[in-house]
Structures are given as structure tokens and as C-alpha cells.
Image (cartoon, rainbow, N blue to C red; front, side, top):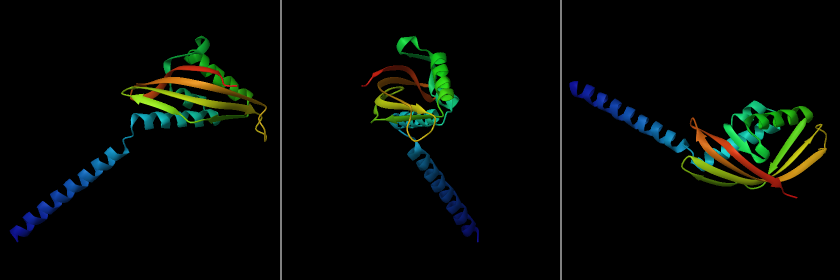
Length: 153
């Protein structure tokens, strides 16, 4: 009888150890590469713009953001807010993302077609840009801290 208790105890510990190893393995499998994390953040920010969630978009922008023409974080926020108020629907169609990630820094280059309008079938305005962005980890999250864009006509 005593041997059975020892065996059951051993089996329980081995079972718990296997379960713990499996759980740790699953956690390790869900850790994305830096490139995948940047792509996911980009996708989340694109969805936020299209859904008019300016605050959610700005969560992905560094407080120290700088862009063309002296644009800073506040100016970008105000531009997005103005466009959201002026257009019932904002569309963003991006070409392939060219992502380079190394350590805690990354860059994303892409072409984007921005559209805006009252939400009917065809947008009233459209413009295409070639964009290059620089990213870094801030408090464990990827944030864009610099952007450069030019007309892609």
C-alpha cells in the first residue's frame, strides 16, 4: 500500500512537470518576432484610423514623434482628429510593407492610398504617398518615432 502512495505521488509530480513544460512551450511559441510585432502594431494602427479611433492610433506613436515639415506628436494628433471630423469614412490601402527589425529598432517602408469622403460608394478625395517610418520599443511596445512621406503620383 505504501508503495502505491509513492507511485501516485511520483506520477502526480511528473504529470504536473509535463503540464508546466507544455504551458511554457505554448508561451514560447506565441512570442512573435520583432518583425511580426511591428507588423501587428502597424495593422492595429491602420484599423484605428479607418475606424476613427484617433486615440488608439496615437497609442502607437512616440511622444517624441517627428515628421516632415516639423510635424510633432500633437500636430499629428490634430491632423488625424481633423480628418476624422471632416470625413465620415477614411480609407487606407497600403502596398506591401518592407519591414526591417533589429533589436529594439525597426523601419517600415510602404506606399499608401488615403481616401476620404462622406461614406458613399466613391470617396471624394484620394492621395497616394510613399512613406518611410522609424520605430523603436518604448516601455515594451513598438512605437513609430519618425516618418517621412512624399507624393507618389
